[in-house]
Length: 406
Image 1 (cartoon, helix red, strand yellow):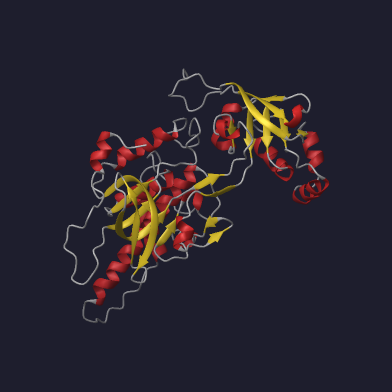
Image 2 (tube, one colour):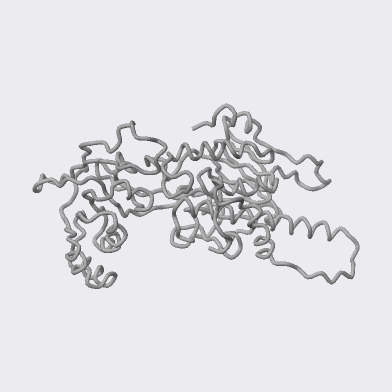
């Protein structure tokens, strides 16, 4: 998706270069930071850097994990808007800051230079086949990709009655007939998450109800059979052939100003070989695996912890590659929701800003004659904490990320 005309004018030039001439024998650095990814985490990082007039470029591939969903929820002030509207509104606000820019494109390579003092970032940007910019830091907000099974009807209806996050989509299907799409050992946990919203639950375990799986489920959730029986949850072990939509949950006439409204979808689950009667459900809570949406982090040398980009929360979510940060769903803190994405982006912006100035100060002081100053050093954490409230704004700001300590 390309930006609107106003934003296109704001980002028409890919390089937002320093106003001062480069020092002799030093490489020209285009940006303080390049942010890869234009979802909530990347936008929050760009906002944080814009607020302190850092030169930053955000490169957005146009691929978003929450792209298929009808509405975005649990984001105060923007509860119930579409993900596309939220991104559009955020970009419109960010376009008012002259030191940052945004472009559509795909980053293909990040190359550390001069002992990680800057990076070459190469890719295909905004109508250009190939281009390279330089930046002192790189922020990876590349997200995750859900690994959907090939079962007919799941991908086609993903995010529209079939969802994975109760907080994101469950309220719209409260008190309806719910199906769980998950292996047997995941079912008790999903039931615990959803019971306050749904009581009519069928768990479609798709042939995974075996003696070995039952033993593994018992180890993971002791007395799980008693628990499911207590709450009337039926386990359906037949192999699913397809999930067919019978009715769409929205008509297009819903009031867009409301944060939430019921969605009355209807599906029919059919089984391989026509085995028995199909089962109808209004919605499904799924538990599928996910993977990195981009190999860029791994290709750059970032370590993976459980399939996530390793990030040190005590140091602003920096990775094992000095100067490269990982934020949002992609990183190893294993939290995946929009409010957290906003928080992680803002946290990295604060630490990155402070670290850049510490590096600049060290360079400036190294050029001065030695002095007898006894001033003590402040940690990056102390600097970051002192700036947090000023950069973070008010609780009603769209990109407000909460308190510093979370």
